[in-house]
Image (cartoon, rainbow, N blue to C red; front, side, top):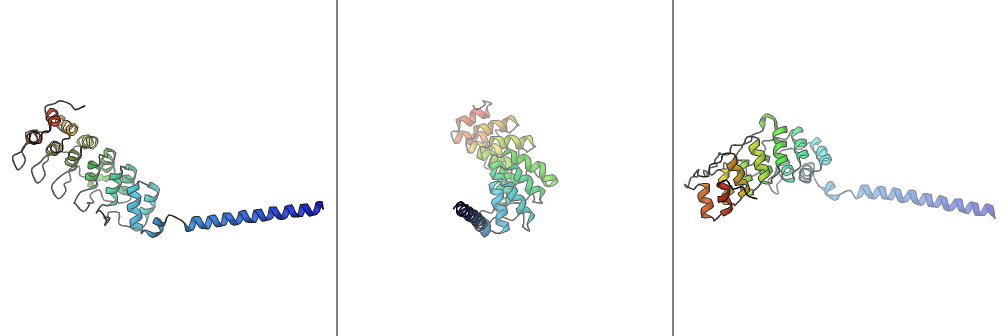
Length: 238
């Protein structure tokens, strides 16, 4: 009887082990077969854009190692991987792309570089990373099709941190676009007093007229931007 019980116990243990092994094997198969469908269904080029947009550095390094065009624009929005990384705010992704051969001068569908994207998104860390890893091809005042440089977009977006970083990096506060507007014009148009104050502290001219003979000060007056007018007069915004 004892021997029968022992045999029965051994049989049950064996069956449990076999069942466990089978469960583990099935789980392993399921894990392989249920990898993110996005990864299985996307191309290497799409994985590059996705990794840059999400700031996933390991996936980005893997994507960069594949045969992809690092400067290709995503059809949905015309953005290259470097632009997506800057909008995300991932300076690690910026460094990875540039060290892998992406061009710091690559343009999106609007003729804007990744620096424009970083500036408008207030990603000061990415502005710095672009300069650090962009090498001699980096241009602080590269302009888009409207003649606007990154500082102008910072001013328009109220992106104070990126504006300060761009000025520290040497951006020209007096640069005009095709309409004759400076960054200060755009700060005044959109009521961004903090950026207006930063620009004034770096020598921006509140009375410089655009092609329509309108100065930043006049723009602020016409639009009733009282907070900006105070900033133009040296009153630091809170």
